[in-house]
Length: 426
Image 1 (cartoon, rainbow, N blue to C red):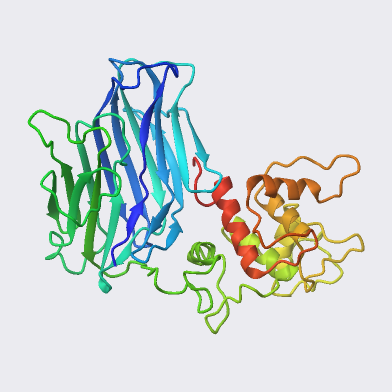
Image 2 (tube, rainbow, N blue to C red):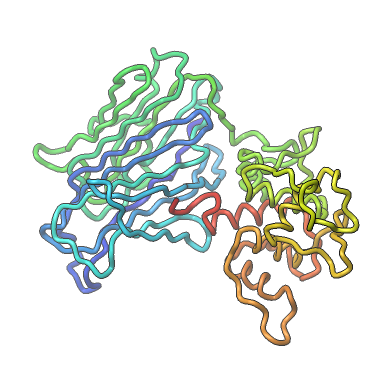
């Protein structure tokens, strides 16, 4: 199975006015992408983009990334991206903002100062991390690969030089690196595993593969407007965590499940683990103790020994040696939860939507307006989640009892929208 990762989208300049000529008069002198494949099925990417604005002034560039890939069965999955830094040629940080689409289909990095026009050659070094990128090739579990649209394929300017360097993890068999590495140029829909004469592949050593786009005409650009470079780096290697899109993430959560994306991501981060029989039971109701434990695990990197050492943690219905006591204690200490007026927490009580909304908004520290006069205590929390479009369509009433699948979907979407997990300047 070969999977096309639509992970690197488009970059265009921020124009001075909307009335500028429709034909851009600037270009990309150099687009160089360095990709490190990691053992945890992620990649670290640094893009070196040199833009020439000497013929046409601009404020900066836009860099768009599509967050979904499709496998050979047509299944779409979200690919979380962590934006780490954007700097110039001397390492000085560029001003930039990150915007996620309402449907979480793409993220746009807007680089530059809207109050400053640029009229020379500018360098943009964009560093980011992408999760879940490697896939099994041709149904052979020994061979895996990264297929990636390196430059994006909707540029409206020429790219004079386009290169990519892929650094591999531990490789078992280096003899087939050339055989399993492809490169192609073209517009939208181009695939890397069809070789073309305008894109060259070279295996530098046992761990490095280089790709170069070659001009189709003497003296011309490597990529014309509307073109792009797509690569496939295939290799045989051990110790890399590969997840096949044909397999269920849990025994009862197949790829067709509405919760597959969320559970694949949360399981990979150790936030959820399921039951001993390999199932997750996404339709089961979840109680307040279980919900709090998972939310705390999504926010804090480590569990603290809290319950036995915090004197202010004294819910009357929680024994401090209970399996969930430390999680509830940590949430209480960070004002994520407050319990009921009678001094109880109700750990075994099934959690409803409005209680979950409060915990989620508090845990991820999402700005929210306090309720106005006459509003219920939960209205601000609910409004915040609705505005962010992270509420599953299965939740239709305020007293709706949360399921395990709904819990996972909301945590996943909140992390995507608010940068705690997927898309955020770090």
